[in-house]
Length: 148
Image (cartoon, rainbow, N blue to C red; front, side, top):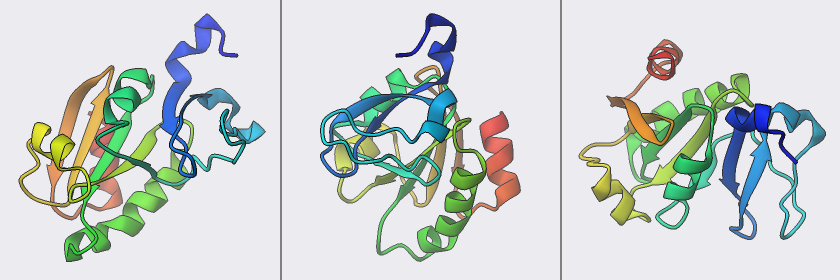
């Protein structure tokens, strides 16, 4: 259970195995959070997949900055930026929720966000978009984007 003083360090993350949204206390990631439905572990040191059905829950229910990597499997530049996003997730686990949105599989959310080119990297805070970068990005660009 999360105390009221820690509500800003909470994230809503869909389970990659069963899809159930879980509210996770990011101050306790070292305890190895598990899905409340299926009991499988969350690995918050890597990007979390989100989609049309979970995007709004994650954005509204998370108290830390959220980096959203909008990509497609066929996109060459998306493959170039993926290791940088993975490294960023590892280095900022518990402080930033790093997510991935497949724009081909989730066209409703991609359209609503106005994604016109990929990769597009978005930052959300307090339920609102606070930053956007289109194209390949290095670590410094991600740091500046999340810090803005």
